[in-house]
Length: 420
Image (cartoon, rainbow, N blue to C red; front, side, top):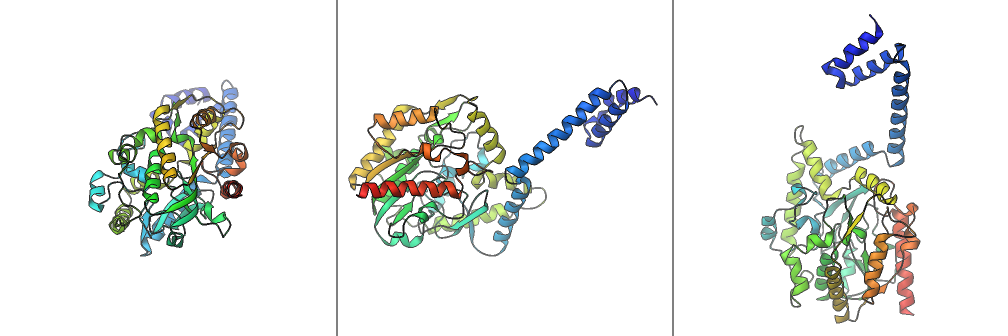
């Protein structure tokens, strides 16, 4: 038959979406004299696209293989008989539905079931599955209050250093908590949990102060606390928190506390977290497996593609930013400062760059620095030191082990300067 006629018929066929017919189409276009230039162009483009995507996949951590390893490790831990829980962070108890989806929210009735007005940590004293970036799936044993610390740190009521913040303060996706890098003679604990915004950090600090005291409090401030790209449909962390009635009490009622570190029974929370995680694991079968993995990913994994694409766009300043209401953020920060004054703790804000930040002129940096300077707050300026891609994971948006080590060195140096 005439090659041109064969191509025309193939284009008209309903099966053009089939991969093999596409390949045949390119082959026939190359054979046909009239369509040979176009066919060669398609073939060349396909090769370049394939090589490019393969290179990106290899460079950014072999995504497909990494996802399979997450799935395998999760399944192995659940089937081993060992008690394991997902990292149920405070943000998963917030009820506002945005683009995170309903399966990222723990229904309100479970909060009543465990008898906690608003959980500020994860389940206590249990192996907890965290997140996966360059080092694969990370798990750790939570302390007696559900945070990522050595449990014996809580045997003392005084700590040299207290860390507040979100997943960066929780040392996301690396094998060791970054506060373990501090000198052995320094007592340090972190109340950081993934997804925390300023109001949740305030709540955790108020509860901590009811029983413990810290010499210096370092509040790690990240951009999603107070901003988002305009095209990102997720709520700014503080906006979402301000809609939670139990969290709002920490801001409006000076006497409010749950006794989270001082007598609150967290064992029902532990039992719930283990059973809740098992219920998700039991859905692993052919038809439900994809939905299960999607649910788990929203709870404690980080979206690789979204991180990479958004970071590239933001780095090129293509996306506009939207910011939280400035007066609302100031109110929370002033309340945190007031809480520190109650125990004569020194509060230091530590604004962090993110993977997409500009190291010179960054709009997020200008916003947060201007706000903190206006409040006459103590600031540890680490932006220039840490605004370097070598400190961030290739396959995610958090610091890698080198970045967390650099951060801990900067905090320890600041603490020693203040001490002297």
